[in-house]
Amino acid sequence: MNDRLLDFAIRYGFLILLVGLIVYFSLAAPGFFGPLSAAFVLQSVAITGILALGVTCTLVVGGFDLSIGAVATSALMLSAYSMVILEHSAIVAVALCLGMGALVGFINGLLIVKFRVPDLLATLGMMFLLIGLQRIPTQGNSIATGMTLNDGTVAEGTFSAAFLWLGRHRFDLFIERLLPMPVVIFIGIAVLIWLFLGFTRHGRLMYAIGSNARAASLVGTPVNAYKIAAYMISGVTASIGGILLAARLGRGDIASGNNLLLDSVAAALIGFAVLGAARPNAFGTAIGALFVGILLQGMTMMNAPYYTQDFVKGAVLVAALVFTFYLSSRRTGAGH
Image (tube, rainbow, N blue to C red; front, side, top):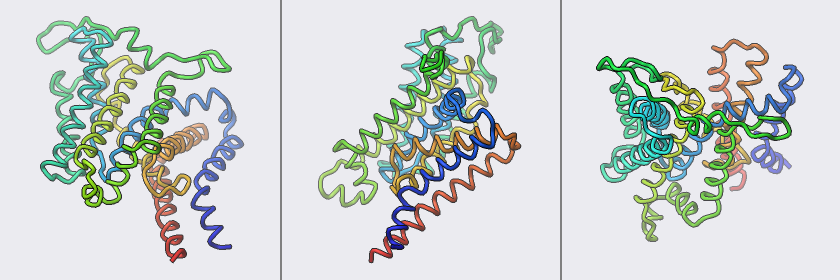
């Protein structure tokens, strides 16, 4: 009986907690339970959720990407620089950002597999490099139409309407202009990565590499290629997050991505606790992002001080990880 109860707690405990949280905030905060509030929660987690899905791919191969927040803010600044200062079209700006994300991921992967730099150190170094690099062209200033450039000229380019559409358009769903475009993109990426990791040969090989890279190599799996691919996926998803953030803000705001790294890593790690997976997975990551969003939206609507939010996020993350790994080890022990 105890084993069955433990199994049930591991599999469904986190989802029950999520439902309990929604019920509590619905009763305690008037207006929390409704389509507009749900759309706001989804919009607030869409960008961090996209980044978290990229981190999930690196976790699957036994790695970790600390550079995602810096890649996202670099994409934000690059898209703004491209359109406002160089006067490129939306298509060129988006292509530049995606190319930059893929290149950063490729370099991260090379540092890790070819030069044997530990993943945390390689991606931490890349993070600092990008944070510095994105500030050099504008001397640390944000980018907006009409700004004075270093040579005294005025930037006359503007964010194109097509680009802003990516971050600001809302689709009609039951209510006019309810569903934001970034949410649609987040759901699309989540489904793609979930299908890729869970239902393709490549996804299964990536899990095999994460479990035992040496064993995977011995049966002929190109371990290095898959690891580099995982970091490239992470870089591209991070740059998509940065593009959407720039499209929502309509300016290259240097400080707007400060919390992206911590929130997305929290979502990816909370995902370990969903359905008792005890491993990185796209469905769990999406639910983890949603959980963080619901928690912060509920606290905001109940007028909780803003400075308590990071503490609560940290407490939830620690609880989720203890719940996952402690209970899973108990179950394994019971099985023996």
